[in-house]
Image (tube, rainbow, N blue to C red; front, side, top):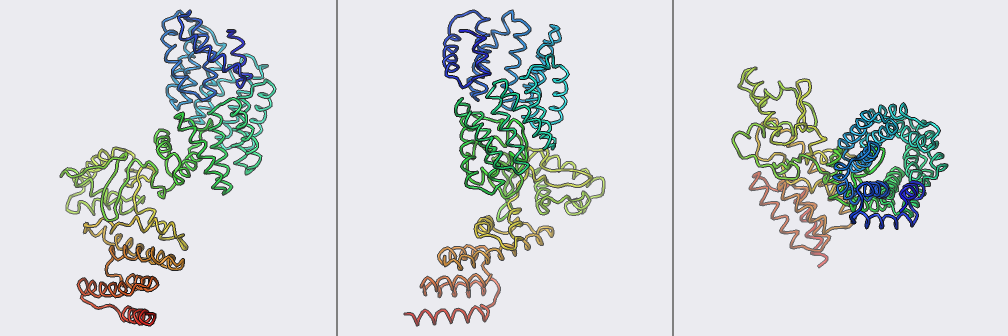
Length: 567
């Protein structure tokens, strides 16, 4: 095998059938008892190809197998630096950014000790790639400056292209859209001149992202189509995944949800199969949050998406996405229960009573910040200032420990609040939908179903009561809206089921008995009309000591009369 030839082919024609053949031969050779240096050289030739294809399992397997040989062999400093480059590239590609930085720094140390600055530019570019994939634009800019300072051959079009590509990434993440587009286009021209199609396809994905932010959607999709075409030719699942996700984002921006869902399903299926965690070379948390939120709403690769969100520490953009992997989930409607990292939290001990009381108090205010003095007045009304202050500090410490997330409860400027980036509360979506002037049927259905009973049922403190009643009134209003929409669509069976559920939660609301009798009339069920009216009479008498209103009585008589006339 000619190593120089195989390395050259990896860069200039990684799609060439000979590369796959050489890869198979390299695999067989690595199994044989061959010279250590030859084994290292073969591995270095093969690893760029497996990285670019996105086969990180194979890349990791080879690195784990060969690293002990590299360590035990009298390897030249240049070989060691190249090996650190490969290890570091795998690290950032798998979102292990600290390990990538360690490999990058180790390579620089080897270079300094050996007085071998020839590869310093490449090492710094490794650092730039890692920082861009992490979304750390400050680190990327600093490392890019060092890479440019250590550029030994400014006439090398490939190195200049790589630096231009990275500069475009820094400009883009910094918000310089026009500058990023110009620089990225220069990089593309250089990559095409040097005949490096994988790198050209990669920067096309970058150009597409820039164009999307300029609302040049179709031009962006043209670049993505070319990148995807090359990904298919090369069989690069990495390129395929990145291009699909970016086009999905473009289609979401264009309100083409069905197309976006198809692309997202395709891209995330590839990502899930390969356990990708770096889903974009220029990581933007806001964009990835939007994409992954959309995926969860469409129930695409739910478990994998939740895994990525946790690993990349993404914050939800809305409490409406119930299957977002919230670190802390709190249920307050009809029950009080807490899930921490998906596991039920038990809080039966006496020492947990006050932390839970503090949590309930904070839940009553959602994301609003409450002053320490107000909290002390509500929870420790009999205690003096210093004693109450210490009690609050102790209780806050215990609460954070119970929730297993220090940042779930914020303390700023002597004010406490729940951080909605970490905490989901069941009634927040409920409140939002309640204030929409024309909520859609699906939203109303989801929201009223979430209402399992009154807010913090069983609690009698004054700070609970007013909020509880406000939520309950919202529930009754939304239930009536939903029922009327179902009736308007002549869905009398579903409407009747809905009214029965509402009566189960609020048994003295006469309006729902009236609506239920109308539904049974439409369904031609006089016996149920009669039993509904009798239930209304009995419930009002037992709960309130009253009879149904005249409106309810007159409606019942009218409905019974109409049903008898039909018979």
